[in-house]
Length: 247
Image (cartoon, rainbow, N blue to C red; front, side, top):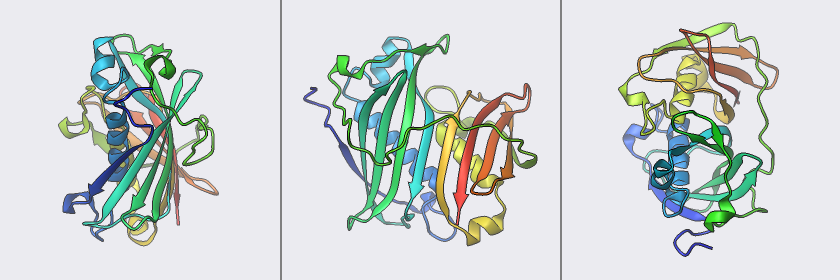
């Protein structure tokens, strides 16, 4: 086992004024970004870090993600993020997260599935975490479920159009995963954002958007959730699809 990579990474964050909404509550896309950054940090001192994979012509991409929100923290709250690897399932690398308040209350539980792809061809690469002495917690689950493919729906309502700009692009030269969630939130009616609380979101990431491309966020109401999709205008390719639950 690596002497520099802890089995569970714990990090503390304080929420700033620019990370909350008009009610002073943390925006879900901000928390999503914090979780993704914690995943990067946990791998940072291993052969599976961003730099190590870049040297091999590879990179991590998020494929599937599910978050259950128990309570959203507020402006100036301190939160503790825990993350750990659950090993692999076929081609997926599995990772879970918990977010706690400074008094120990659980705020968010999340689980995720990642792929390693070739930077040039985008072909999926097989990974073996054990080969790099990366610590895994096979029986520790924030959410004890297997992430599956979200079935497509006929999403007839277009709630938001967007042209991918500078602030959407991350270090891998494509749209950061958290931006898709931000676009989905922007597609919802203002009354919903003001009166209801986001309880969970599950996302499948299917393709990458690049700078300058125009995308549409479409949605449809299902009995237990709102279905959302992000579609690239020029070729109709579906970039991601999600199930979003409000209360």
